[in-house]
Length: 379
Image 1 (cartoon, rainbow, N blue to C red):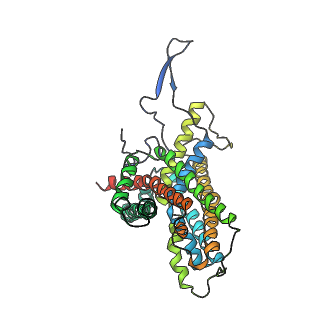
Image 2 (tube, rainbow, N blue to C red; image 1 turned 90 degrees about the vertical axis):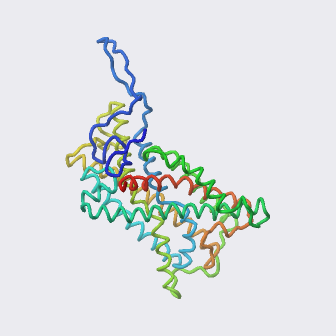
Image 3 (cartoon, rainbow, N blue to C red; image 1 turned 180 degrees about the vertical axis):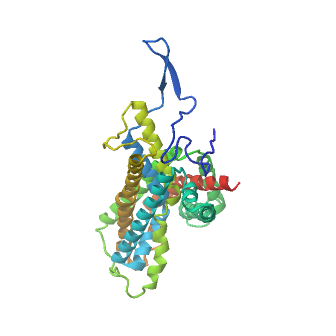
């Protein structure tokens, strides 16, 4: 049953980042007789997940909101910036993302907001919320279109090489491929909340890191070659650095889902603690009660900050640096904007192209989830 709640109509039904009482879902409770009184006791029969499991589920969801097929263009961005310039660009945008995500999350906690739009409305007013709606609509719709285009670009050449000997054919056409992609993603786009996308995000996470691992193995197996035109900093064409910045900045774009993911994390952790009868502390001894006093606000802010920091500095940033260096060091200044096309006709790389396209398919619901909430707001 679709539950449109909160400002955006797509937040989990339980609570916001601060929260009220957790209301169990229908069909998840079981009345059992109590031996002492002959009455009934209520037991929740849903599976309880540990706070650590819930934490990593939130990290994966936020990581996969940001990480995607844009990673294939990062070696080209390094070619335009140089090794030191590329790493510095990644670091700067990672830091900006860290700061901005924490500002958003802290504001959501202090205003007890459950969506990004609700947070902006509470802090900056209705006019700012309207501006944000317009910007997010353009960003998310454009992202969904680009995911479709990239999927067709990745799958088309593979189908052509297998079925038509590298010649165009009906099965490799954009119409057929995009129709197939739409058939796969449409059911996923109907899911109601962030926690429903956990399995999809986890699978995309594993696939993308497996692709990166395969590329690193290929590079090392080739003797870790370094192209002769690799430079530390591009001083001959500094204007190219400006062209690389939009690609690098898009690699960290995940702001539109951080409030919803943080909300879901705090809700699920609180639910697990209540079922286990714990006294408000997680496995690390951190207070996890959801409330409105200063101590609980600081505790909830700290919890969401941990998700953000692990996502950016332990996963996304090192992953981007390693992937970019493999492509740039191996192919130099002439590396393609789509790294996998450097191995055209290679059977193993063809499989990796299909897998990256699959990552796009699995990222689609995360973008569509946020866009659907905004559309609900508009109508």
